Image 1 (tube, rainbow, N blue to C red):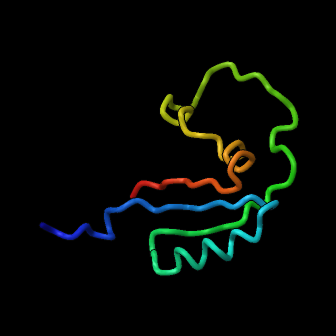
Image 2: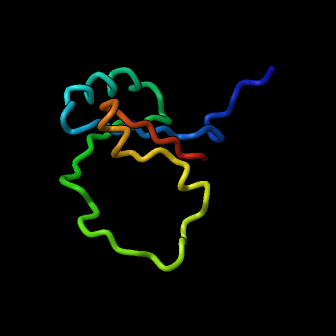
Length: 86
């Protein structure tokens, strides 16, 4: 049996809600030995889209729309995990 290669594994970005900033230290400690994990604090303020503007043609790919909205995940769970394929 062969060992999995670090080179072809996904990266994981852990985004912590600014309201729960104390979780950053816990996650940094937990994933300190994992080169494929990064922990960051969400520093966005307010709603990014203030004005709803209509779009004539949907430009995004269908699979992108299926991804969980990070803002919603942060509201529900305090941490959002984004998988970045390698």
